[in-house]
Image 1 (cartoon, rainbow, N blue to C red):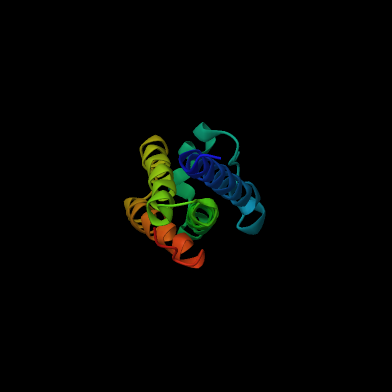
Image 2: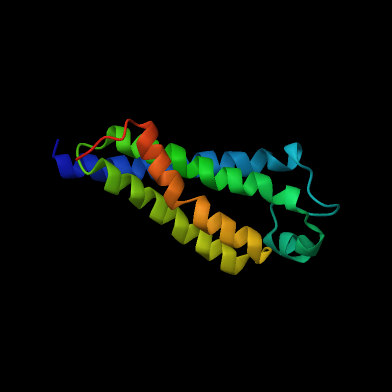
Length: 138
């Protein structure tokens, strides 16, 4: 198989795996840290309306979902890639960062959380995923 095609498939699979991890953590987060009364976690408008009732503890699971989704997605990508392991892992971080920016605009949260999430959950975690994959060069 063409090495470039293998790299593209590595990024696609890494993104899908990271997306599943992110979504899985988000889907169980309400059972780990209960949401404020009356919030429907499947309704974005319900979440927006309840945002003033959120406490810092309610932002732990979203951060972990973002960070772990990127780490695992970047790890899978770096392990599967034929070359450019580091750059491809960073692409995973960049794709998730774009999603994080979109969510920060779409679902306003406290600015402190948004800054922390955007700065630490994406690019640094992509680097960490690459590093956990062995820090493969090339």
